[in-house]
Length: 260
Image (cartoon, rainbow, N blue to C red; front, top):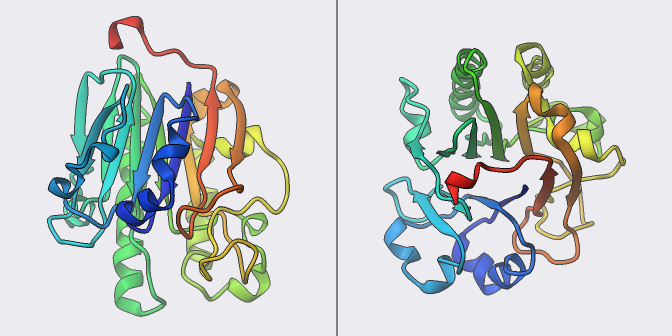
C-alpha cells in the first residue's frame, strides 16, 4: 500500500502547478491532502476527483482557510470528521479519517503558531488533546496512520539550522518533548523507519526548495505495530506544488478484498 501526503497551500494553486497530473502517475492507494484553503463545493471540477479514487473532503466552513481531503482507491467502511475535541479546533477542517477493517488512515492539519502567546496556546491545547486521543485509541484492536502537516519538526535532524530555531514555534522545547513521547504511547515516525538519510526536509518557509531554512514537518505517524510494515519512504523533490513537498511511504499492507 502506497500513501502520499502533501500540504498544498491551497488546492487550486497546487492543481495549476500540475499536482493531479503527477498524482496520476504515482499509483498511490491513499492520498492525503492538507491545507486545501477552499470549501467543498469549490472542488466540483473533475480535476479534483481523479479517476479510480473515492474522494472525501472536510472544509472549515470559512473560505480560504484550512481543509483536508483523502483519496482512496478502496471504499472505506466509515468516515470520521474531526476528533471531537472539546475546544472544537479540530472541526475547523483539520482532520478527516477513513476506516477499513483493521486500519484507520487520517489526513491531519495541526494548528500553526506565529510565535505569539495566543496562537501558541491554541496549538499547545490541540496537541495536549491529541496526546490524550492517541493514548485512548492505542487500546483499540486496530492500526492507525496519521498523515499530515504537523507544523512541528520531530528532532534536531529535521531542521536545517536547529541552533537558531529553538525559539521558533515548531521547534520549541515543549514541542520537542511532545514528539519524543510518541514511542512511549505506541506511535512511531514511519518516514524514519524507511529512510535514515540526513537533510531530508519537506518544507521551506521561503517558498523555494534550497533557499533559507528547511524543516521536516510533514509526517506519517503510525501505530508502533506497523514498524516492520514500512518498506520504503521518500520525499519527492523533483517538482514543487507548494512550499511543502510530497511524502511517499510504501507499507507491506493489503486492504481486505471486501474493501474494493
